[in-house]
Image 1 (cartoon, rainbow over the protein chains, first blue to last red):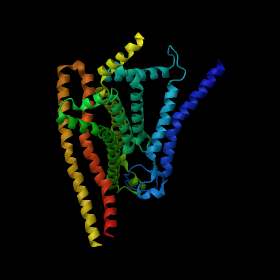
Image 2 (cartoon, each protein chain N blue to C red; image 1 turned 90 degrees about the horizontal axis):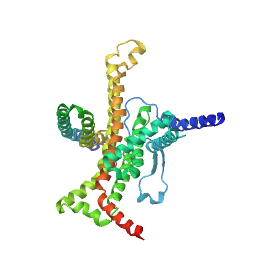
Image 3 (tube, chains in turn cyan, red; image 1 turned 120 degrees about the vertical axis):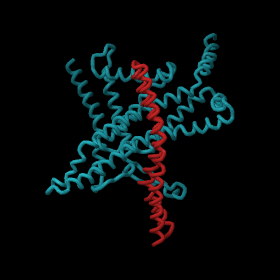
Image 4 (tube, helix red, strand yellow; image 1 turned 30 degrees about the vertical axis):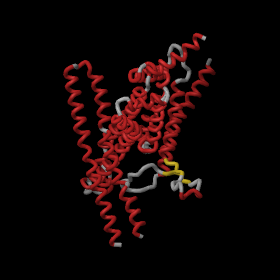
Length: 306
Length: 96
């Protein structure tokens, strides 16, 4: 019994390391790769690695294969979330005794309630894990800016990848009853509305990607600009103080922290919620549920009779 | 050389002007979100017990109404921080 408890504690420590080490690695990479420079720097993702694997095709494919810190950070976030999930779901009992099992059950219940409230009970089992994954990945990616590294969600490529994935899922759910019903979902209100429907369908991934990216990126840019402006202001106001005292940007204390609460924590969590919510609404709204159930019960009835 | 300088100056000025004009789009979300919050306040005044549901729906709707303003903000930030550099390089390489 004692040995079992000790080995369980060892596994816990390993999983906690799996959660924390990727974040430390992200910070270390950021510190090692940031050039020492003064002044305001607003730029996109830092390029760690760049290669042109097919130099012969250079005329056709003119871009290099680049690995930026947005990609590296999003993989580190994924490893960290995996560690968190394994840590929360270790040693599950039928009657929960540990705090972490209560936390895990709370998360699962909340997400299932959200999915059943927005999409109906039909989708809960198939869709709740995906929604929870989207929520966790988006929220933790945005929160990465709290530890000072580049948030993967302030790169358009990351969010555009998620939006394309969601668009594929929406199309798959819409087309699950055959192409005839998929086309009818656009053309049921007449030809003029059909054109508008197609346009709004194509605009879905663009709007989802730009909404998320625009919120997180503009928050980061505004934070940097306000911090730089406060530094300039404090050197203007307090520059007459003697010696090193005049060099300390005293006015930078306070206001950037309040902005960070809004832009990093509130806005990041809200955008994760909205991204998951829109995913649920689009999929639930596009899915022809009655048709699907009618077909499947019709297909299942002869089997049951046979 | 003079021509390059003038052309780059025109590009920079037009980028700044374009960023300013793009942010006119901020009017729309301002009016829309103000309207949404006013209606939410009315609803809470009429039914104080529905405060939680009204507030969360309002925040969700505000965040979605904010999208058009954010498109403009993205365009403006790109025009200020990205476009002058790349357009300047393009011009220099063209005129050379």
